Amino acid sequence: MENLRLESRYAPERIADRVQEVAALLDRDFSGNPPVLVSVLKGSSFLLADLARRMTIPLTCEYIAVSRQEGSDTILQIDFATAFPIANRPVVLLKDVVHSGVLENYLMTQLAASGAPAIRLVSIIDKTPERTTDCEVDHTLFNAEGGRFVGYGMEHGGRYAHLPYIAEIYGLT
Image (cartoon, rainbow, N blue to C red; front, top):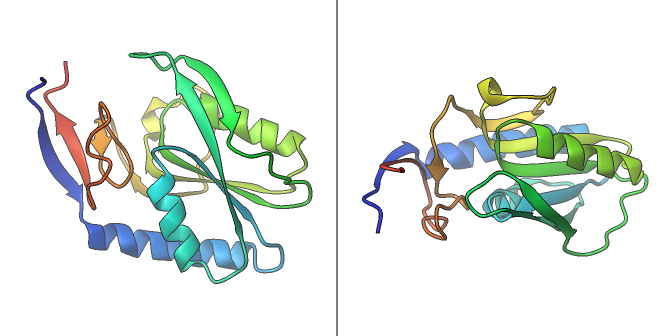
């Protein structure tokens, strides 16, 4: 077993404050056209739940699962959990950590091709310095340079997603 150390970076109260701020912005942006919140599983599932509870406008929640090659960022498969209609519906794509921007660009292109008139990208952690493609995050809870994060839905080795705070994980080899 790895000898890992977790160091708290964002307390539950700070996360809740940021989620409330983003929810208010999305309420304003989509006041006349109810959005579809789309969570990229599993890391943004807590964000989806919290945003959905804090937004005051009608909305729909959906999920996308991305399978990666073990120990790699290579994407093997993208599955839409349900076939959901998005023609003429704005989409809010929720992601745990935005690194390179490649996956997010691909998903936004597919959603736009399916008829979404507007797409917003919301992340828990935005690592802008790691971008390898042009990808703009519309709203982020926190910005970071480097590091590996767990908690608030984000996991490492199937562990730590349940933590109510976000921690940086050390001791990875």
